[in-house]
Image 1 (cartoon, rainbow, N blue to C red):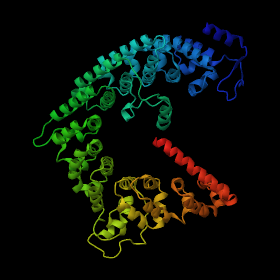
Image 2: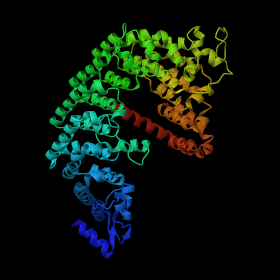
Image 3: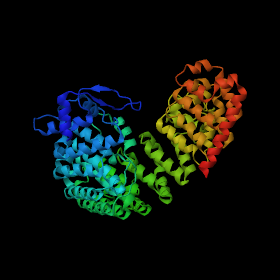
Image 4: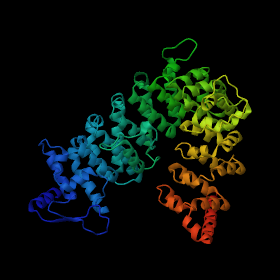
Length: 622
């Protein structure tokens, strides 16, 4: 009936009113002598099916349908019309499901409709695709459609709508087909994405790692795709039938059988990583068995006298990523066994290796308190060499683990300052903050010869902080959150005001002030002592992208007298700030106009804001 209506409308040339993406309710955007998109799409499917060698883009001659294809996220007119449109399109698409999924424009349209599909509509599409599963899954466009269908299906089954039982059987049938030919699907560049999505659908868990990321949407940049997915992926955990978990258990066994043949393949490796993460969340026992199989196989290959064969795979780019995931999902007992049997006495070599140091970072982050002590004892003597090799992730992982576990903090801080040559004599400790921020040893920072041991005050006023390292900023942030951050606080308080401004205006360095303001172990008196050094430089900070953010953070923690001082200094340059792309935000946030013209109103506003913050803090604590 829709095909006839579309054909009659196109032949008669009658006017069809349509509403498409209108911003005003009931407003008609225009008139056309072509049928609306809801009517014309079935005729396009008919032309596409006619075997005339047309692509779906060519079959869609209607300009309004071209808009749908180019911008599939546009809304359709009315909720009822949307449901009817999607239902009719997917029902008609069953006859051309495979060629439509493999067509670039057709697959884009199906992807746009998939989040709106009903169980019945999705059943129609899956029935068309499953007989040609390998062809569709191994195609760059078809894999997108299977991914979208697999993500939609569990949500529909959970709601218990009509045909949800049929949909469950179809997903299980698709999953069994993939499991039977796992060695084919998991090794293909496109089909491996389908395997990873299927594992998440069966487990009812979306994973956030790179392995769980879907295919990039055609014609979009990676950043745009990632942003779009963040808002459309749905819940990270959802209910699934017991039959799905049973099939997931079967996949775990299939992966164990294939480890020996394909673990070095990068696509299989990614599928295995997703399987480990999903199993860890839903079937912990199966996850432990799979982890044991991975470790047992890798440690049995090419044994070398005196050391574990696993060390070879820790230095392999593909296998080391699998081991990263194994360590991430392992329990403390398995981690202790891994250290004792495979890497004890080899941590310095691993930290120095360009690939293996990343797996070492994972081990450090996952280590329980007792194991962390052993890792620290082995790594701390070579900390300077690790810094020289610029494997800074190992250092930041150690700091983060010691901060989390509340252990070995002062020992690690001492080892760190010794690596920067500023532990002895004690006077050098006053310059540890700029040294760490710039990741330069004492002699390099001040331009001294290595054998020199100057007795004078090391803080050379002519040496200014010129650059801030990302990892240097991370190190300072962790140190400020230690139980006793006094060494770093004294160094920050001894820095020249201009150096603090440089630190606050840097993209990475500005986060040091976030840690200074947020750390519960920083005494209020010492916090104010550091922040007071910024006085006289508020205007330059306000005109900086990152400095203005620091001022905002300081303002939110400041007392009323401190706010008055800040507002007084900034108000003198109100016009300059109002014309600055960053400063004008502070003019609004600090209510500088009220401060200048209505001081009492400004005082009442700040008192009300303080009470509101205290009220919200109490609510959050409760």
